[in-house]
Length: 614
Image 1 (cartoon, one colour):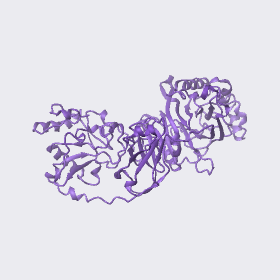
Image 2 (cartoon, helix red, strand yellow):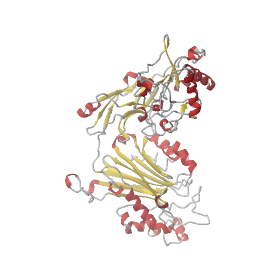
Image 3 (cartoon, rainbow, N blue to C red):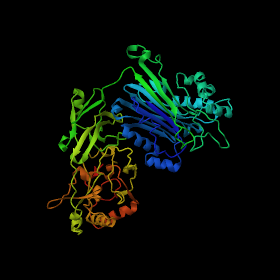
Image 4 (tube, rainbow, N blue to C red):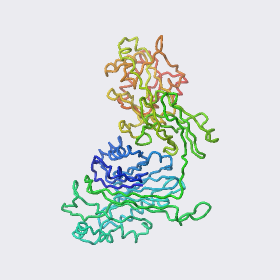
């Protein structure tokens, strides 16, 4: 397990953090889990608004650097400028369960999150582990305040389940961050002399945290390796020189990494017996700072631990079976078997990932794990089976991984080894001029189908290329939404919850003749063509031989609420009075008005079936 802490001082990320994460070191013991704690990430109002819409730049950087090494983001939590990220090798994901996060504000008496702690707890191979990233009060004289804030964080953070409800109930706790402990008594000139002369041991006994570990009951049992690296605060930004400003702050080891193993005397083991002392062991292999990073007034600190568990859960909750290669669409069959006691949900899904994916929702395609006999398979320990449709499969050659995503635990419960997909690339479609060349009014008398984005992903989370995190359509009851001509790319936006009402169907919307003409004129105005390759992501004219095909009003397609489509890549917003004015004009001219959502204008006649629309 590698743990990193860094107060980044609101700086922009550097270009490379490979050495900080101890990657490409050639060591035989590569990390299995990496926990990264950041403090003072830029959290000004404009920056926080941007980060609320997109992934923050620091998290993007670490995902970009770690994904080629097969690390996947397990969980992340942010409280203003304090961020915690936990990564793990993809093949460990099924054994990382019960993932929960929490945060505690201690700034301004608990009302502000510039100070405090964020945590991620999870079960690793059946053992409860908690990562706690803290930013405690600054200044030499605030040692007692730091103790009180840490005690508050330990008291306030509680998790669901009986396995470990409090932080100190976990089998292993890693506590790290900008803890802000300083060096007492010694003059700044002696401190700098000891650093220059490499006699750091003469500073250890005056370090406030070292003193507190032996005197504060709240720190009982916490361990730390020797401080064989220079104090990590405070430097002139862009240099390795200690503070040369007028304040001339005394150097200090503010950035620390500690750990605590749960006392064997706490609680009883299986059968009422006290667990043996050999149940868990932790060895610190490395504890160092990284002077090469100069973007902040703090230096980052990293520690590598070897953790020895007495037992290991070696059977994943879900086992997935797949062929070594998919060279034909009919080979895209997935068989899976759920372990006894696995909490299955009808909203579980199986994702298809490229090797090197960044997080559980960074998939290429997915299929719902909704086999008709799923419950029977779970009870009798039989294999269930699902199949990817041809249009959802990636074309060309590449290495992929399948992962079973559990909606109940919000984590991947089973993965496969990498396998090959080598499908022929689809030929270019017909020329756009085939259908768009005729612009007569008769051709516009057809049924328009509002298509969901090409990748119908259940819950995309944060994507590298598709960063749109627009609010759900249902929140804007008075808006008519149309896709912008500016964004015609594919998106992974629709969430599984928002598609519950239309499993596998594409909702169809019938529009009056006048509105169809208006849509056609608008399409020409925006440079769209009905069947053009670029515009087909949003609108498509459905035709059959002999004329346009219409879907009956009884069909769930016709009665679907457009808001259930989930998120669209880009939206144009109109005032409701302006948008509904055209509908009232159509109604005045005698055109039928079908009420398709609660935002439609009143006074339109609806059939009983149409009143039952979602």
